[in-house]
Amino acid sequence: MSRPPLPPFTAETAAQKVRLAEDAWNSRDPEAVSRAYTPQSRWRNRASFQNGRAEIVDFLAAKWRNEDEYRLIKELWAYDGNRIAVRFAYEWRDETGQWYRSYGNENWQFDADGLMEERHASINDLPIEASQRKFRWPLGRRPDDHPSLSELGL
Image 1 (cartoon, rainbow, N blue to C red):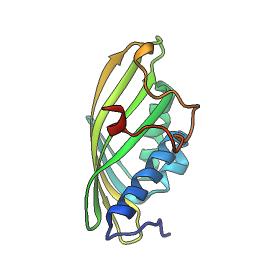
Image 2 (image 1 turned 120 degrees about the vertical axis):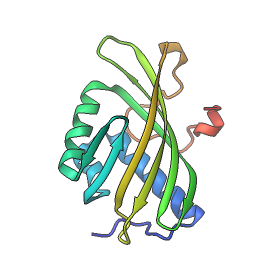
Image 3 (image 1 turned 135 degrees about the horizontal axis):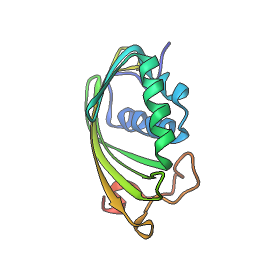
Image 4 (image 1 turned 135 degrees about the vertical axis):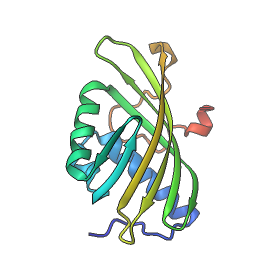
């Protein structure tokens, strides 16, 4: 299965890949998101490690059960060959009603078919007040006219 755009990436195709990933994650559909990864994809996410699509699906399903009102923005940081570096921020609310903005970086490596074979994520959570939220679009895909991380000063 091929998942364009394919490496080696250009500035344009790397940015497209980042937006496609953002859109998928904002769907909060673990099965759909997992199809962007190789069957044996390896992840490091904070202090947890996932290997393969089944573990990715389980991880994402648990994540989105605990992170209500999840909205994410990703931004291209760098690219080279079959690798992309991304910075991101997402906002979410826990079961007590506390809002967070989570900031992080990801390093991605793709196979020749454009499937991600490695994902390394570093993430920090900042408690925020509801009035400090910046990601207020309806759940789902971020509108094209919504400001980017850089435009928001994040």
